[in-house]
Length: 147
Image 1 (cartoon, rainbow, N blue to C red):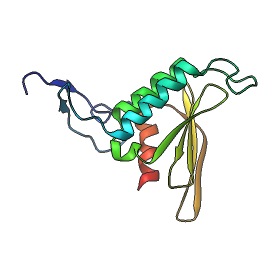
Image 2: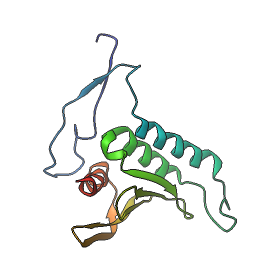
Image 3: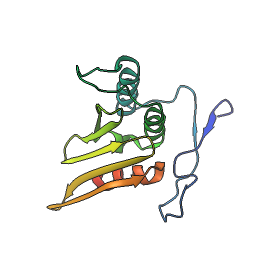
């Protein structure tokens, strides 16, 4: 794999002192298979970014915030495909993005520097109105819902 590019997964470096298991670096060739879930989310994200201008909902909606766009790209690039497969991206009128659970009562709202979420698990609703954004913390919630 001499012409392969070396990529780090989000678990290679933590941004906090969490005890999340660390993944090993992966080597991905330029022609590496891209999962349908990842490709679909990337396409939706790019479409939202380029097509949703101010007032896209016929009211006072905002375009997708640049930092939200970058954070979402980071999540899509670094989260396991089987996890992404459980989520649908939807725009929010305030420039943030929703990750909506496909087969579960769950939603995460990704903002520029923070996120909020709720999900139902074993009959209990788990939620947070405000979490500082980091890749590890956001993906951790995505994983917890998928379990």
